[in-house]
Amino acid sequence: MAVLLALACAGCTSAAEPAEPAVHSTATAALPTSAGELEELLLDDVPSGLPRVADDELDPPAGEKGADDVAAYAEDAAHQEEVLGQYGYQRGWERFWRGDGALTTVFVDQFDDPAGAATYAEDLARNDAEFYGGQLDRSPAGLPGDCVLMTVEQPDPGHGMDGPAVFAWCGRGVFTVSVAAVRPGVEDARAEVATVVAEQLDRLPAP
Image (cartoon, rainbow, N blue to C red; front, top):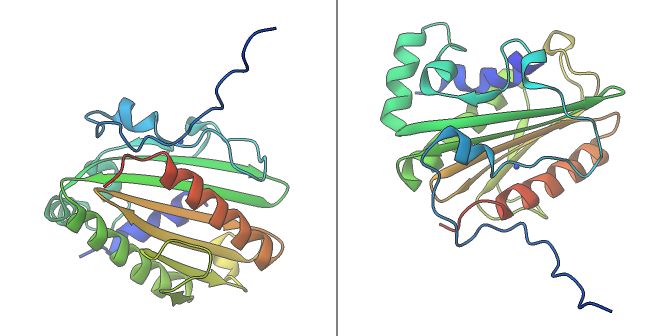
């Protein structure tokens, strides 16, 4: 499943006074300049409480991604790496949570500028719609206006999904956030995606 979700890239042309509540937003934080700094912005947990999958338990491994890693998903890796350079791709990070037939994934990618991030998100959405056979919703209720949503109610058995899947691609400044959830029911998958998108976007620096 890790490979299938990453295939979206193949066709692209995080009595004392009471303590202050935890604040997850990094709206005033500087942009990451390394993979380690980007990792700090990713969600550690998802609302559904699914256990996180160790990066090295997946093939290829999740975690840190450079342009060469993303390009390796494509049939023509050299061409894909060139395309990623045109987007201004800098670095990315992936995380997976899985249990009892359910799956949630978060991909965060960083680019040189917002235009590259927005174009990448649009191409991911279009390519995944073609690959999975889903319909894109460009004005999804409950998600930010720069997000695109796709629902696949009856996945092809060859795609390795155990139930309906919901995908979202969002841009936030120089970042692209891609979230997917597989659940026994569409509504559960959509609810997970909407909440994960909101929490992940909240952790990223403001545009």
